[in-house]
Length: 249
Image (cartoon, rainbow, N blue to C red):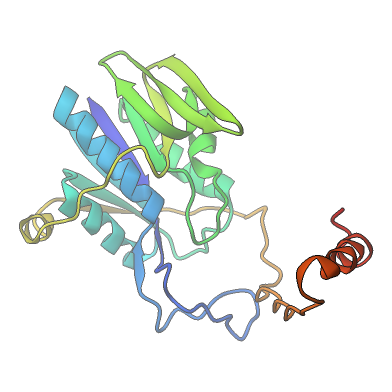
């Protein structure tokens, strides 16, 4: 079983984000970068698939040289080898990223491709599905249950108000979400072993982006609440404010 996992390095979810002077990017000097949390579920599912069906797990990431740290984390979890598609260009356009990944994965005889459902850095949630479309294989997003055999897959995904069950042939692409599994933590032994596993680098050029970031803004400050009364006597005023000011009823 030839298994690929596509991962991304993102700012720590607990980091305090500051907009850079250009107003279009963030200050990265003091930010700790980590493996995208949703990608941890993808790596774990890839490893479980390997344990069940055999084969090899390759972790791929696109970014600058610092993105190698995310690949090393995945290899410390147990992946066999890594590939960094190195680019100095901003990787903001999901289609350009998907094209670069598809070019690399397409000629590898892949059986299964895993992605996290989205990257917490930009929340696009598009790259996995775009890769599946470019490769001409089934693409199932936000998978919450998965059973794989040598030739097919079946499982479920959560939709509004219920669950959707699916079945498809392999090769296929799946994006993973919380609840699919419980990712393992990289052990000290795993981290030491990851340093010796092969990590290949290839320089790639993304081309002209169709997506331009024009401006970043902080979320607006929330207005302070106000007390309009107490008990049943305040109900009428509350209803009036909800209707006339908040306009939610």
